[in-house]
Image 1 (cartoon, rainbow, N blue to C red):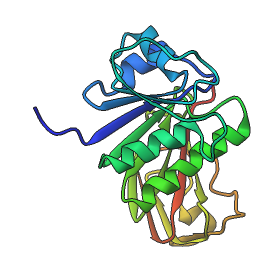
Image 2: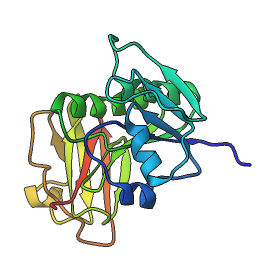
Image 3: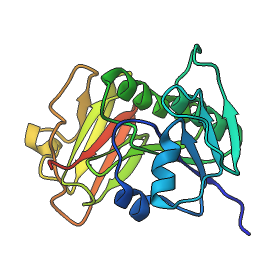
Image 4: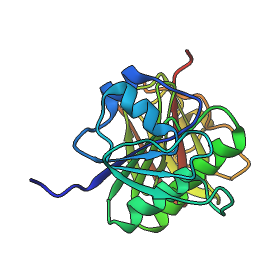
Length: 214
């Protein structure tokens, strides 16, 4: 059996979409439930390898899997502890399902998990039916899985951003490349106009948000 390099984390956030989990979660990955996220996996009939939780939003289940329990009063969310577990165990890619919606502070904390993963050389993505969020360093290809995409400078200014294969490119602003500051919003609500869009950045890290309007 090939070594697992990917970890999937299902959070306890209010959003739940069993069909999306069945369609998009890689069942060959190592699967972690963050707190009540285990209920979504059970509903979808998907194997659970580990649960990371303080069990403040769900009872501790009687499941034959690894269960790592934290006190309710702690300095990290269950999702972040799940990410740290995945990074510590050497996974090279993490997908976090249903990390957005509900309380905005929880959603923002989950977005910051992208930065933690990046610091440890791990690719990380937040995704649900309406949004997929990731970071771009150097370059990335954007497809048409989602209706629109937006680019923001993540935690620092970005220099030399090139966008090809999209409706709005640097040429729209009369430039060959764009500089995007952390306060800029002109990179919002673009869409792929060719088969794919190609994004490159000379310096800095871009936050890529792919979204659907429904």
